Image 1 (cartoon, rainbow, N blue to C red):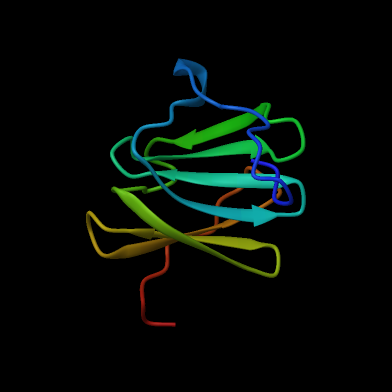
Image 2 (image 1 turned 60 degrees about the vertical axis):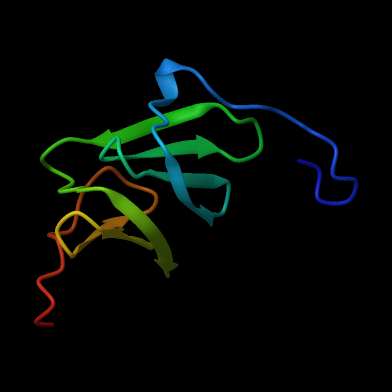
Length: 104
């Protein structure tokens, strides 16, 4: 939606985005991250164009019902409701930091 007028700019949907109960969003520069609560994934979009950048999913990311996100510096933190953990990853790279153990 246009922030000034409230007019619809673009509707993003479809199987390529793997949006499944989109629950939380975080913006880092031109990257919009969407947590998919039931999909166990995070969808990254180009905020200017709405185009799909990538879908982060699977065992390397340890997402279990992601339901919240926060950015700190260049890192994206994803809260996982399903197992009470936090996954940390660089917002601009595909490498993944190990999940937070809560002991640091």
